Image 1: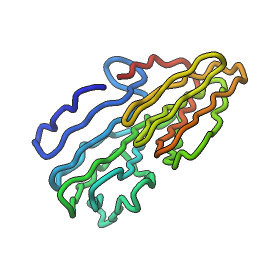
Image 2 (image 1 turned 60 degrees about the horizontal axis):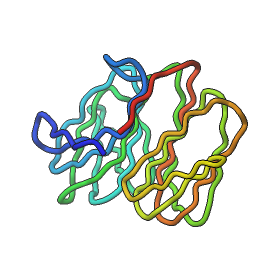
Image 3 (image 1 turned 180 degrees about the vertical axis):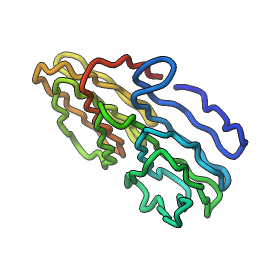
Length: 191
């Protein structure tokens, strides 16, 4: 698990879960942020963002045009543009937020927070990857003869090759599924 990096303004930290794309940037990335005080978010022109409150809050994103986006209820993904950047207005002591950013064009993303009760299927499709981030509980992922165990705050990236296989995710707790569909090859690194 990657160590959280403090923000330059000292008002929070970010732990990157996975990043895909060129080394000097990214096609998409997922991270966990801890917000300790109200602070401006960074601008990411050319990117779409999704944020989902996992713990703490309330946290409201306030945009320069007067739009307010409350990150509530917990475990609900909210989409917004990467530019202009909002002000994160923390109305509690802290907030833990799951974030995804993806470059516009060439990639489509779905952020799917779910309770995990029993099992669910993830189908392998060409140019489709699945990020599985276990928020709480325990889970196992079965892919053919392979079995991968996930504990709380662990992640696994399934890279699709289009062979039509299916993965079975079983367990109990809360999971964040991110479906990433690209139009070509990407280089992915995860922690």
